[in-house]
Structures are given as C-alpha cells and as structure tokens.
Image 1 (cartoon, rainbow, N blue to C red):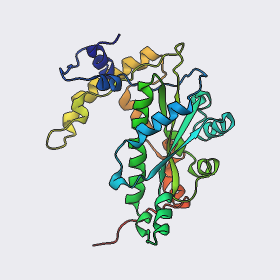
Image 2 (image 1 turned 90 degrees about the vertical axis):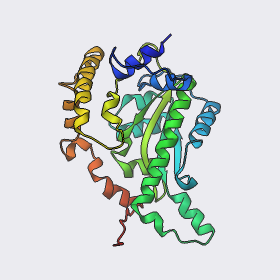
Image 3 (image 1 turned 180 degrees about the horizontal axis):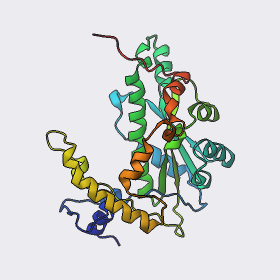
Image 4 (image 1 turned 90 degrees about the horizontal axis):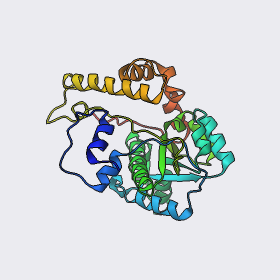
Length: 278
C-alpha cells in the first residue's frame, strides 16, 4: 500500500520532496493518477458511465451555461476510425470506452431561438473559450470519478488533429467541436502504468507576483527527474524534458495538423470574433 510520502516522491520524482501534514483520501487518489494506455476487454457499463457523467456534471460551469457535451463511443469500428484520425493510437481501439468531450455552443443557440433571443455573443472567442473550459473541468471530474472506481484513463489531445473529420464521424452540428478524447477502461495488470513526475512546486507556484528566473532551479531538477523516468520506462527520448518540450514547439509541423485549428473551427461554425471596442 502506498504511503503518503511515497505518493509525493513518485509524483515529483524525488526522495527529497517535502510531504505536507495536510492530506486526504482524495488528494492521495489524485497524487496516484497515471495515464493508462493498456486495458482489459471488460466493458464499462451504462451504470458506471452514468455515475461518471454525474460527477462530470458536478464540475463548475461558467455562468451555468453548460457549454459542453460528451459523446460516448463503444463501437469498435467507430473507435478505429477515430483512432486513425488521432495519430493512429492503438489504445483508442483497445479501450472499451472512448469519451469525446465537446465545446458545445449549439445548445445555447437553440435555446436562444426557442425563447426568441439573439445569440450574437456566440460568435466571439470568449464563448468558444467558455466551451473549452467547461468541457475540461467536466472531463477532469470524470477522470477522478473513474479512477475512484478502479478504472484508468488517458486523454487524447490528437482528437484535434482533424477537427472536421472528427465532427463528421460524430455527426456534430455547427458550433460543436471535439476538444479532446478520453479513453477509459480497466487497467491491464500485465502492462502497469507509472506515475509521471511533475515539476517542483517552485516552477508552477508563484507568491504575489510571477517570476521566470525563480523557476530555473526547479526546471533543472525536473530535467534530471524526467531523464531518470525516461530511462526507467525504456522510452527513447533523447536529452531532457526541456529538450523534448522544445521540439514539440519548434515549428508548425510539430503541431501535427493543429496549426490550422482556427481555420477548422471557423469552418465548424465558430467565427472566433474579437471585440472592436476602443
């Protein structure tokens, strides 16, 4: 059984990490999160899905607009087609359940029409952002709920590689787009997932004002923690986290198709207007 100290040590990839006296079962569960990419064939029941979605709907929503939806995909052929659109990731095919989380402004447009109101604000970037944030908050609640039930999960950002094709596959109307996918299933004990270290809190936690130089020491420590993690996992990653991350932002090609996201979103009914007020 994991001790609280071991959970913190795994999360930060260091035996020297401070362990606070404050804690709870929920915090321990969150500390133990790992991305699971290998699953048993056991289905995720409708009953379990109902509980997970109820947890998702318990997340905060901007102005209670509920600007998100989710599509549950179990059909093997549809999962295979979506996998092909999302970097050909085998765990999308293997997972018994794929949840595709959506920024959904179509429902608000429909509601406005039903009560005879205009909906011009939906054309603005802010409302698209509201949909993305709402979907993300809901999905993270869903992950925590799934893990509390003994399931594992992994996010699929590559669902944004081909937004129009994903929208067609899921029959999404205008003003609805996939933000990311989420594979859920029972983890395969023969292929256990490891906790990936996170940077020291000195990298992400700022007091009163923000500082880039204050992060340097923590980033150097994180590079060493990730170098050890890559080696322990047999991952063919050259150099450090800094090297790996820099390659992911080097140029437009590194975005694997997502460099045209604005164009794709506009084609899907999101004008993404900016304000003109002076």
